[in-house]
Amino acid sequence: MSALRPRTIAITVLALAGLALPLVWSHPFVLHVAIQALIWALFAASWDVLSGYTGQVSFGHGGFFAIGAYTAACLTKLVGASSWIGMVAALLLCALVGLGVGFPALRLRGHYLALVTLGFGEIVTLVVTNWQSLTGGAFGMHDYGTFSGLPTDPLAQKQAAYLVVAAVSLTGLAILLYVTRRTNAGPAFRAIREDQILAASLGIDTTHYKLLAFSLSAGFAGLAGALYAYYIQLVSPTVGSSASSALVIGMAVFGGVGTIWGPFLGAILLFSITEGLRFIGVVYNLIAVGAVMVVFVIFVPRGLAGIRLYRRGRQQRGDKLKADQEAADAAS
Image (cartoon, rainbow, N blue to C red):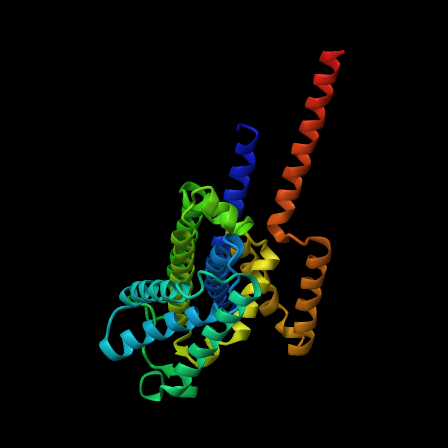
């Protein structure tokens, strides 16, 4: 345990330094990239709970993101609710929608479930596009305000928005990590991912835990959507498109599926790389990002988190070989 303590401290210090960097280097572009990266990080972590941790593949997670964004925007614009109420409402409503989507998907697995979730995302996009009286149609919603209580100075406003988004995103990450690692839900999720039939035969209530995974994942995806709505201050049907779902899947794979913190970190790095390379042009930017993804898929197939897992596994194999050798020497 003592051997892990210095590494844990070093990781904590590095993470805090990374979070403080946008405040120290308070350039509007840096803050803009950091805020959006944290929003996508929460979105990627929420997807990983359902698809990476529980094995229930979702290709329409952008639908929950869009529902959360439109819920927050509608409450603030039509009712005058504060951003905090809008975020809580987006989380709760999306959790209920996730529960509703989970029920018909209980008996589905693999590509069948993927098709159902893909259809759900497309349905959400069609609804918000055609419900013009509420959502503004294809032009979207705007002029509903940003986070409550922000200063009026543009730079100070971005700094305060960064602190709000960082606090909410990190709190969401902490909750997801606690549920998956400190409660009975975590082992149940993993058991369902490995073999659902075997998990049920061992007495695990797979229906309960699959619905919990759907609700938890959808709720925090909706919370990420609400953060996006209040920061960008424009919500259009494109936020729930299949492209958004594909992007978040790529971020999760880049970070390492099934770890929660891996997709969170992967989303931050991949989004930062994408935005940081905009100066070379849109086409070359996409080529560069694609090249990074190809390199990772070939050489680090388990993502950023897989680097640590690989080293841990190699160390464990070394310890086992050493123990076997000592046992053989003692027997002789």
